[in-house]
Image (cartoon, rainbow, N blue to C red; front, side, top):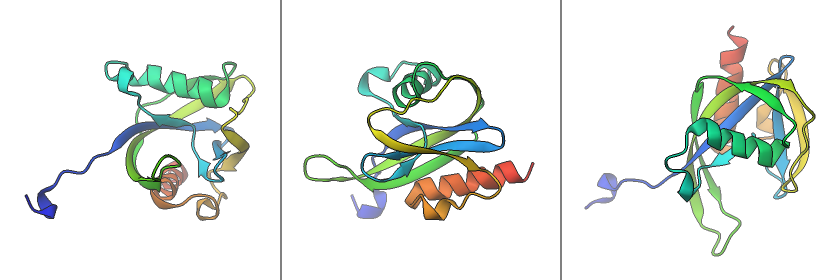
Length: 148
């Protein structure tokens, strides 16, 4: 089989664009990278509804007090990164981006996040924070939001 015929292997993730007052939540992880709430689907979650996976990630990363209303998938992201694990492998992640409306509750960052920011959909400069596929996804999200 030639290289051009090989299928690629991706992790699959959900990413949440948590919206509040014309802004959306971005968080810095303890590796110094900016990210969106959400993450990869675990092996034992194959049968789980995506909403349940989103709920798990939101509780892990934003705390159990946050109430939100999840929307329909809005965009798709493809990101490549070097893992912070044995051998530092490069992995590819395919993510489904969901808008979510913040309703109530204080955000409590997980120990894996050092900082958060409510980014204005009109003035935020994602290229100063994000790179790779996450940057493209945030730019696409902002373009969608600003075209309304």
